[in-house]
Every structure is written in structure tokens, then in C-alpha cells.
Length: 206
Image (tube, rainbow, N blue to C red; front, side):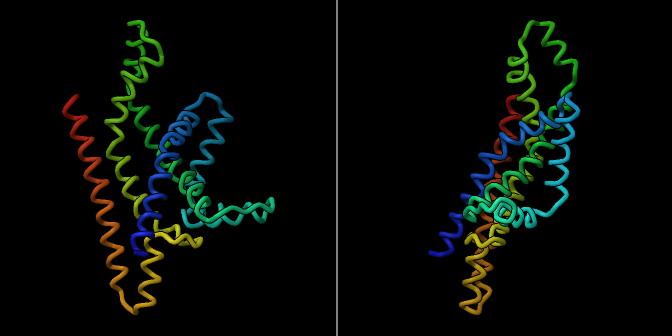
């Protein structure tokens, strides 16, 4: 029962991170590509910090820093979600940026000549191509996210791996750790198959 509860917590971290970081990553990518030098510099610094420091360090900072800086504290689960969203938004932003910059300028110019609006050009011409090109990289990051949920234990969140460790200590057995590994494998297998399915569908309709 405890293993299932830990799995539910891990899944909550996983889905909430995706729900918030996928759209935020796109906003960050647009900021990274902005013509405004100051905005581009700030966003680039943010991305460099998020990608250049360990997620475990970011978790500790997000949880403890507010208390020491402004005397405010919040619950551990919220801290985990904030840290994960900030971290993965930076990675997703670079994936989005690579996809957006891979689209030839000629397609934008052709759309303008044909009288398409910027919104129509983006949603009906650019975005489908970007999704197809970034899907493999996006899939790799999502698979990594499944495994990274284990880092939530760093600040005391009882996710799957922490529950397995506690059970292993009580039982003097590595079996709970093995079971947790199976759970992670199954979750990653499902995620991988979903991305394979979407990739095949996109290739079918090209």
C-alpha cells in the first residue's frame, strides 16, 4: 500500500511538472529568441543556471531560500513542483528553440505573400513541423523526468523511491528497491510507447 501511495506521489510530481513546464518552456524559448537584448540576456542567464546546476541543489535552494531570505516557508511538495517546473522549463525551452529555428525563413515569407496572418502561419504551418522535429528530444526529457521524480526525497517528500528505501531499511531487504525499479521501468515504458505512437502518427500524416 505504501509503495502505491509513493507511486501516486511520483505521478503527481510527473504530471504537474509537465502541465506547467511545457507551456512555460515555450514562453522561455520565445524570450530566448527575443530581439530585446536585455530580455534575451536575462532568459539566457536563467537557462544557463537551470541547466548548469544540479536539480538536487535547485530543490534544496527553492525549499530553504525563501525562509532565510524573506522569512517565508511553504510545504515540501509545492517546493518540489516549483523546482521541477523551473528546471524542466529551461530544458524544454531549448528544445522548442531548436525546433523553431529549424524552420526555413522562406516558409514565413511564402505565408506572408499568400496573405496568411502570423497566427495562421504559426499554428497551421510552423507548429506542426516543429512538433514533429522536437518530439524525439521531448520524449527523452520526459523519460528523464520520470526518473528524476526520485529526487523529491531530497527535501523529505515521500515519493516512490523514498518509500522503497524506508521499506528496505525496515525489512533488511533490497526487494522494495527492486520493486521500485520495476515501477519506474513500467512508467518509462509507457511514456516511451506513447511518444513512439505519436511519432508514427505524425509520420503517417506528413
